[in-house]
Image 1 (cartoon, one colour):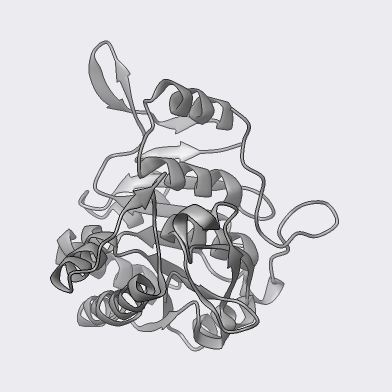
Image 2 (cartoon, rainbow, N blue to C red; image 1 turned 90 degrees about the vertical axis):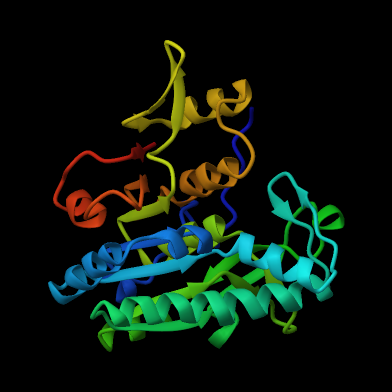
Length: 283
């Protein structure tokens, strides 16, 4: 299969241009809303302890199941096309309400209850995440690709001593909102702020491959490994945008993306101390 091209604003050498003023971020962490809801308090205590020790995380979150629940309660039909939610203006109202409201503020509260400092915002605020329609917009509606991230906003929040907690919504120059896949948004944020590492927190121990009949987490994979696993069906459904986003953000200053199980004890501290956990994706 042909790898999808980078979608982020590029410099002359073809790489996304990170803002040096935001490169103080230690890592970008992406986590789904349902995963965050299930994570133990110890995860947030670990995150707060890291922040107190000088680590500067940037968090980008999803919230797909909560969006689906609210759409069902309101009687609004929804469907997915290749892992992306078909998004009308009516659906987008609910997406924004859930992501920028309920989920975003829940995460902020959990971090602060654990002793951390966090500030929540969406990609629409300050035109933080600037977007354009995806190539198959005729199929999926108001879903966007990221063209730019205002890294100075991220740098400013980090400089004040807070973790940015970002809901993956985008906006264009006309003010049109877009639903952004959270994995894609996290990859774009990592690329533009120059973070060296992106951590994807999930409820699985990494990228799984069937070895001798047993699903096994791979310690590391390359781009070609991923393409072969997508082709064979080992990677499928919602995992495809996760690995695609990881592949797209590994350029510029970003060196690696790690997919980990957030329920593992002190997973972030152990990972940052050099322990092998989850699956590392490298070029």
